Length: 189
Image (cartoon, rainbow, N blue to C red; front, top):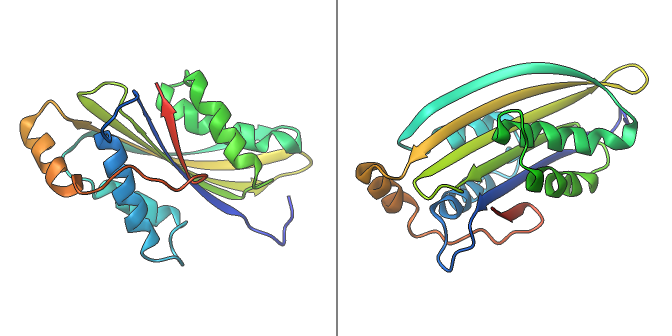
C-alpha cells in the first residue's frame, strides 16, 4: 500500500428480480444516494453512511457488529478480499455467487483502497428488503498482511406489513431507480 495515498470508495447495490417498475429497494437506494450526496466532504465517511441507513423507518431485526480481521494475501487480492467480506454479510457466511465478482470488479479500479463502504439492498423476496451496510478500513501490516476493520449493519423491512409498506411508499415513492454507474450496481437475482 502507498502510505501517502488514501483511497476511499463507496458502492450501492440492489439485488432483486427483473421488473418493469422500480423495486422498493431501488427507490430507497436512490434516496440514500441523494442524502449522501448532499455533503460531498462527508459522502464517503462511514458514520454518515451508518446514520443514513439507520434513518430508514420501520426497520425490524436491526443489528450492528464490528470486528477486526487479519488477512494475509498477495497485494492484488485485496479487492477480492474486501468484496468477499461484503458478500459474506449478505449470504450469512455463504456469499451469493453473483455478488462477489461485480463488487471485486468495481474495487479493482481503485487498486488498494484503504476504506470501502458497501450498501446492498436485497429484495429477492418481494415481501422483505434486507439492508446490509459494510464499512471497511484497511491498515497495512508487515509484508502482505492486512488488518481489515469491518463494521456491519444489517436491517430488514417487512413489506407485507401494510403500515410499513405505506410509510415506505410515502417517503420513497417519488424516487426512481438509481442511475449512477459505476457507483451503483443492479444485480439480478
